[in-house]
Amino acid sequence: MKELTIQETAEMLQKLEDVHILIHRTPDGDCIGSGYSLQAVFRQLGIRSKVLCDDPIPKRFHFLLPEEPEEDFEPKYVVSVDLAEEALFGSLKEIYGGRVNLCIDHHISNQKYSEYLMCEPDASSACEVLYKIYRVMGIRFTEQIAKCLYTGIATDTGCFKYSCATPEAHIFTAEMMREFPHIRYDLINREMFTVKSRAQLQVEIEMFRNMEFYFNGKVTLVWAMLDICEKNGITIGEMEGLTTLSTQPEGVQVGITVREPKRGFYKISMRSTDSVNVAEICQKLGGGGHVKAAGCTISGTTDEIRQTLLKAVESAI
Amino acid sequence: MKELTIQETAEMLQKLEDVHILIHRTPDGDCIGSGYSLQAVFRQLGIRSKVLCDDPIPKRFHFLLPEEPEEDFEPKYVVSVDLAEEALFGSLKEIYGGRVNLCIDHHISNQKYSEYLMCEPDASSACEVLYKIYRVMGIRFTEQIAKCLYTGIATDTGCFKYSCATPEAHIFTAEMMREFPHIRYDLINREMFTVKSRAQLQVEIEMFRNMEFYFNGKVTLVWAMLDICEKNGITIGEMEGLTTLSTQPEGVQVGITVREPKRGFYKISMRSTDSVNVAEICQKLGGGGHVKAAGCTISGTTDEIRQTLLKAVESAI
Image (cartoon, rainbow over all chains, first blue to last red; front, side):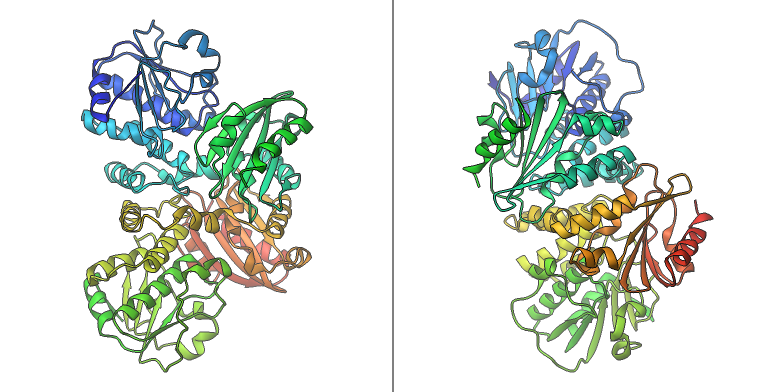
């Protein structure tokens, strides 16, 4: 594995051909914005590319997809974006495991699985890293590229709410806004951070009412169970933005959200509101992520999950 | 009334003496940040000043207050900030009505009640206007001033979520972040936008469950009634950030929140998610505000209120 600079990455991207772009499973605004902005950039350079994801792209991100249909072709190169480890390829790991030529990322937990790596752990988002690369490449920004990058930066910073909302993130955003004043950033944000279907609101209300508090309210546990979702006619995949519920109560240091995408199989999201390093906690449980936002997967009964999680968190608070 | 430029306002502020600074009743992050940043600036210039508000400053804003006790004195000048009309003085109108020398504001609905006016309707917040004025004045920014201005910009833009989050708002924020990298902006945001007491969460859950939908879900009505608050041991004043609930359901164009601070007396907040001009609607009801966020007060029974509001909104959607 060789680490690249922004400059070197910019040069390498220009030389690629027939690229498959991988983004992580359970795709979010940052990996989707990264993947599709990169595809738009490749198109500008006359390079054929295709974005691949193990899960479908949620509807609310469809405005970032290109209008042109995507071609099928055998890749000569594989680039992964916002993808810290091969486990997050999902089932695509069978095809692409060990085959990634270049990874562009911002996770401090990046597992260095690619031939070349451009990783900036101080960047707010993979989209921020790509913004810098595109500027060096002299790419002509289009409305689609700007929408992709804005969405990535906005979603990964919680709309500039978190500590990863750096001055650079604000400045790049201002630059894009000046270049594309007619994009309705407010509507993108509404879609990303505010809007919920009535079914989703219904489920959230139930989750709020069943929220569990531990260690004098320093830790919360929110259960997003299959049963509640099914009862309200909604899939767990549609319950985006759930992780923010767990940190709302006053005094919470670690908010834990347990999602049950398949019966008996649990995806854990941990959020730290201040000084607790949840990446460390999740790494011990076989996961990873950022200092303030991390995750892992566990299986077992809900009682076992609860015990495992509380034990893992206890020493950190 | 004479309108001033940024430059003229900067010059005028330097010449004042013994200033009473007025901010609006039901104070929010922008008027509090404006008032107390201005007080800090006056202190730097050796000018005595005092911030006055008809309501107490909510606890979560106390970190913006100066450490030094405030002196009582008879004002030679009165400056109002973020204050569109004298009705928002509350009971202070008796003393200061018709006596404001300079108003610094960003409301398009400003009633031009002051001797001199510096109003920039395109600015995200009064704090953004003040930021520009302070830069022209050559003020030495301190951590307290930066915290005040950041809080004002962040709260009025919904943490950079709304259309009033201009490129300038992002750039000024980046400049302050670079100058004061150690301020925990993320914790300010957590306090402003995320944290809720358990009582508050309880009340919100009830409000969500009782949310009313009209005109095919284009209009929502959320009731923040005294009874629900009292039942949960919380005052209506502590129920900040309520207005965001009404616009969460998919398809909402106008979200209306009705607060009942005193029995039978209602404060209405209207939020537009897209093209409806709620300032116009609220003006018809004797209120005012911004195109996308406005308010008014009504009295009557809840049935009367509902009819009045729905009738006022109907023609706009």
